[in-house]
Length: 125
Image (cartoon, rainbow, N blue to C red; front, top):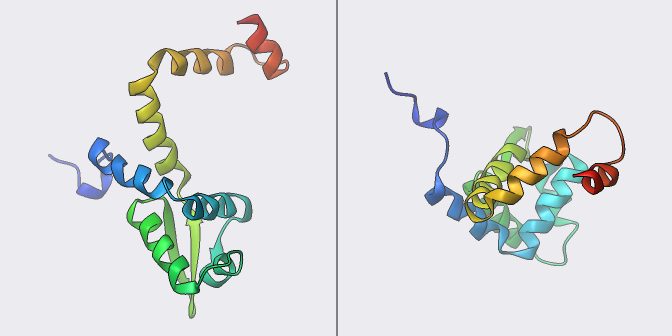
């Protein structure tokens, strides 16, 4: 039995859309704002930039198409939120392919101890 398409993990071809979306500084700032502010209305996002609301809508469309933001309707407003897992998975796959040793080292350092300062753990590793 096969999994439905929505349940299957996205692969490298689909990760290309994530990196295209991340290439633009406005879109990266939108992601940072969503991370800091949680769910934001399109108008709230647009008010943070010195570009037109239609331009912000296009940026949000690119981010949504890449799977980096989710939207939901609340009356006549559209609320956007960051899809953290999608971003982490895409960047993680890339880093694993390009520098797998570093991923193992970082993972080991994070898990190295249950207490203490992260810098102390790095110095001891």
